[in-house]
Image (tube, rainbow, N blue to C red; front, side):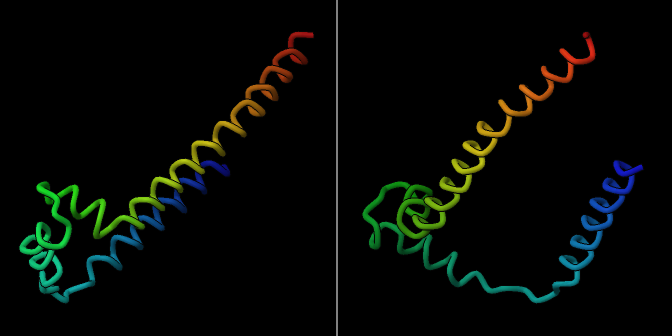
Length: 96
């Protein structure tokens, strides 16, 4: 029953976020996009536009995304062995 309620809650939240995001009707002007495409070589001296944007314009964003991913991986590595140990203890108790 808890699983069904959890699934319904997640589905409802997903539908709510979708409904809210589709109400946005304002069209943005691509001012920043045009600036980055036309000036990336002069600003960064990089020959590749993707590398210039990721490593120069959005360096901190990319760095913190990598840090969050690393934190998540470390957290999973810390908690998964404990879960495996708990599971093996339960199996040992049920076999006894």
